[in-house]
Image 1 (cartoon, rainbow, N blue to C red):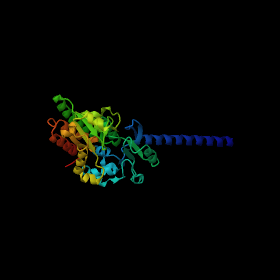
Image 2: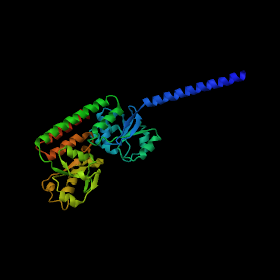
Image 3: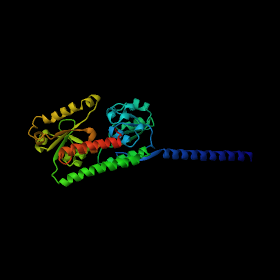
Image 4: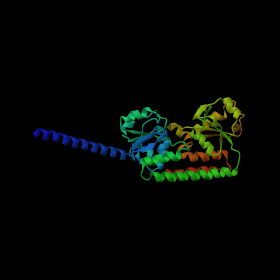
Length: 343
């Protein structure tokens, strides 16, 4: 009898232990579920990230600026060298640590910042980043916020990730952005003119922007006929003879200011880029060259949250009587004051 009672007691307490263990695991799973959310990244993948992360490393300028617009720049603990150059418009960058180059961050520096979340481009750094940071329990979200066509969706995703009043701020920004575009679009449509042809050259000679690039859509939104529409990729190197035969009405060269020295001498860098097009052998008889319709567009304006400024700038070049320099300046000023809290 005593033997049976002893066995029963063992079985009873074992069952209790299993039930308690199961309850604890269920509770832990619920807590984990509540402390993270599932969102869709720019690659269309569903990823789980912490709810309202308080320590973020933002590797790209568009993401960092979007976080500022959404009222959460105080949560950014790390960013790239390139982004920190924009301290003039985002003063908080002065106190944010650099993790080196955005495409190749210093993982040791990044880890020391103890972030809960790293937000980066859809394609850079490579897929090895997730593996390297998973060991440190750091989540990775790939969100471009660069393409004008995906801006609304991706700003919404970022706002959901940040939580708080970020969704309301995103709504206000996107509403303003749409209103500015609608005004411009109505003005150009009302004029009912043939669209001028535009060729956009990237940072290298004869490398032309294709339909996958954010600047391609910028030209379209500004009322231009983008001659890169046959390039199905981001960009492609095109034969110079083809460019000469195409003879675009306008040529736009993209500029990237990648270091402090470039930022200090923006105008001289701009002029050098202009000269690289204006003085190119064999191009002297092209319409854009003869009519002085060659311009340099800052890459920062070709996509991201500043894209509407770039659209107005390009529209001013294409339709100077419809879109004035004052229109461009007012749009930029509104953006800086309303969303970056400039004085």
